[in-house]
Each structure stands twice: as C-alpha cells, then as structure tokens.
Length: 349
Ligand code: 5GP
Ligand code: MN
Image (tube, rainbow, N blue to C red; front, side, top):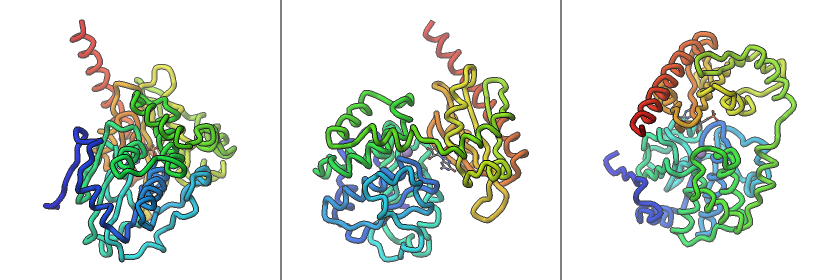
C-alpha cells in the first residue's frame, strides 16, 4: 500500500485533511464494522451513517453478523444490511472499530473491493493499518469517541441520532465508564453526547443491565468447573453446555468481564467451543486483564487483537488442547506484568 497514510495520535483532533476530503468527495460509500458486533461496532457504524447523512451522503451500512436485539433502540438499527445487500459498486469503504481486515468478515470481498479506497478508523492498539488512510487512536476509549472529533472536524453537530449512537459505543466499550481508559476526556465526550440528546439511562438499561435467563443458566453450568491458578482464572464453554442452556454460538454474556473481578485474579479467560470460517473445530478466546497486565499481546500473537485490558482471538483446534496452550501463554503474560510492576515500584523507591 504505497499510498497508505497513517494518522497517529498526535495529530488529532486536527484531523488529516485527506481523510475529511475523501469522505466529502465520495458518493457511494460502504461502511462496515466487525464480526460479532458489540456496542462500539454498532454505535460507530450507525454514528458514521448519521454523520455522512448530515453531509448529504446515503451510505450503505453493513455487518456480517446481525446486531443483537439489545441494540434495537439505537436509531438506524433497522437500516443495517448483511452480506447479500453488499455490491461491488462503491467509491469508498469506511471500516470502523476493526483492527485487521479479517474482522470485516464476509462483507469485505477482496475480488469486488480491493480496488476501492479503504479508510480505517479504529482505536485498537493492535491495528495493522490495512487501509489506504488509517486513523488509529489507541488513546480513545471507543471508536465512537473518535467519531465525535470527526464530526467536529466536519462541522456536523453531535446531536439527536448521532449522539445516541456514539454514546452507545462509549458506554459499552468502557463498561459504563469503569475501564482504566476512562479519562476526563472520555467523560467530557460523554457529557457532550448527553447534552446533544444521548440517553444514558436507556443505553445502560438496554446494554449493561440486561442478561437473558439462558446466560444465567450457562454461567451456572460452566462456573462449576472454573479454574484459578497463579493469578489466571478461566472457564471452558462446550457446545453441549451452550445447547443445554439454550445459548447461541459465541454468546457468553461477558463472562470474562465477571471473572477478572475475582480477588487475586489478574487475568481472566473464557474458551468457547465453535467452528471457524472453514468449518473446522475452533475455540473463541476472550481475555480480560486488571490494570498493569496486557492481554492484547497474547491475542495478537495468536492471530487476534484487542486492547491491553480486553482482547480476543479464534484458534483452530479442540477446546481441551487450545485452552491448555493459551492458559500457559496467559500465565507468561501475568508473570511479565508482575515483573514490570515490581520493577516500577522499585524505581519509584
Ligand atoms: P471480546 O472478548 O469482548 O469478544 O473482545 C474483546 C476485545 O478483543 C475487543 O476489542 C475485540 O475487538 C477484540 N477481539 C476479540 N476477538 C478478536 C479477534 O478474533 N480478532 C481481533 N482482531 N480482535 C478481537
Ligand atoms: Mn471498540
């Protein structure tokens, strides 16, 4: 990608003129976010849709996997299309909240799309800069936070549906303003979105304070066999356990988030038995870490990605074999984190 431009942290919010003019000059825009979409994927996709509409565009918003009904309150939810409605005839693709091209899943078809300019907007530290224009800001707590600054640069007010969509991603990616990257700047961003009409109570009720009963049954089954050793806590979730609880593929109700709160646990993991895109037995891994520990490096080395405190990957193989191998890597990450903290404490005296 000889023409690739990477916009790094120092330059925002003075956003690169090329990014702005590229968005302004495009007519047929495809916006896409990542597979198994979370609140930031859906919020940034819909938020981008509303920002582009505010400047007179009519973008196509696409996701490989249908968004969960817990996001149906976000304005524009019903406009999101799947793979079947995605054509080859675009003059720009905008990829949101995805750290590598595989995360777009079946929406991005190399044969149809490789010649189309690709803009990447993302906040993952593991982003591989796979676009022609890459705006990557790991200092932002959510891709939705970045879009506030983009709207500012384009003189689009962050009000109404834009505010509600962007606040959804900011709330969900910070787990309700509780993650360690929740800076004063994040809170200022949230205040602006609330001033613009974002409904915090509705977002929290629909996304964070909502658990299907089947998830509670699944937790009951798998927590019987939780394992906790040397600061790492983990569970495996088999297909049989999911089926008996009546839970869909991939869903674990954010169990890794719960496990990392355990006293004495520095790193948590869930291992979810699944099949990969080629239909082979595979394991979907979710990692969480307490402050001072980094699971993004483990995930990236295993072909996935994420942030230091929250990351994941999918690996071909059996549940038993993969969980054993990955737990060994997590113990190593925990050892490194502990060493670094000890060194830091010594240097502080
Ligand atoms: P979760 O555990 O909630 O699925 O994901 C936590 C974080 O890791 C999210 O930021 C998500 O984007 C990232 N992540 C999870 N799975 C994958 C994966 O397979 N590939 C990449 N690149 N990132 C992942
Ligand atoms: Mn995100």
